[in-house]
Length: 321
Ligand SMILES: NC(=O)c1ccc[n+]([C@@H]2O[C@H](COP(=O)([O-])OP(=O)(O)OC[C@H]3O[C@@H](n4cnc5c(N)ncnc54)[C@H](OP(=O)(O)O)[C@@H]3O)[C@@H](O)[C@H]2O)c1
Image (cartoon, rainbow, N blue to C red; front, side):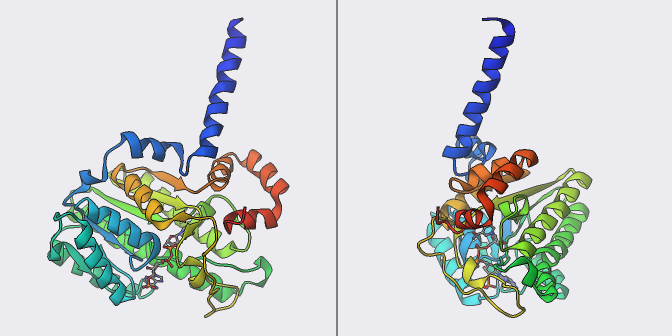
């Protein structure tokens, strides 16, 4: 075998193995590696993490995963009763690492941005510090592109983008001015932020926007770690709460009987991304993980998306394939 043939064989083998990972794993390779060989979540024991949107779904699962390893928590959302029950579950799961004072229930509406400073001060006065902000609160969308009211575009961006940016700026200023210039901001973005999915135009745009905002922060402030965590379909209350094309409407459907990652698994992968300070991580069952990888190669992605078409793409995201 000539040297060139050997090189070609190695090249083909590399891509064969690499693409196999796209198919068999439920997250990107870097994250999978860190879950096995990276820092364990317990390395964050004693740190203070503020999770928004913690009353259900991914935020709740993440909070429980962090609590299990003794991470102190501020948990926020609008439904205070669910946060109180989360606190109880966190204390139970913490194997004695956490006591009552270590989990702060902080009911808050993300849309009331003028109150963000007050909420942040509440976290600081309770714990005396904040190590990680996890911007998780958000809502999705199901609507035909041409029917979306511009008011829905605005409402969705208010929640999924502007409220996240405002809270992150307050916390970034604290990291820079009072915490020695160091800190960590994470966001629950979505694979939809870099891979177009049908019937969610505003949502895709909002997640792409938040990715862009945080990419710039990462570039400007090298001592602030930024984790953009992008799940694919996860079994949560997400669809019931999703925006439609009309203001004030909710999609109102359940994710039951759809093939989706569990919120628990998503919470574990999110926690691993945070403790290992990954810049970008994503997760999703096959073929979502495959499509997420393919989206990193625009030429390949365009061919695949054209072949699949909007209906097949929608079946994939609804877990019907
Ligand atoms: N599930 C998926 O398939 C999926 C996929 C990719 C990305 N994501 C992202 O994951 C994040 C969490 O979604 P999820 O799937 O876990 O859905 P979820 O179960 O509906 O959770 C959404 C959370 O956001 C909170 N929230 C909504 N509006 C709020 C507001 N105005 N102020 C404060 N909190 C608010 C909700 O709490 P209250 O109602 O109590 O306020 C809830 O805790 C979102 O950012 C979403 O974009 C989800």
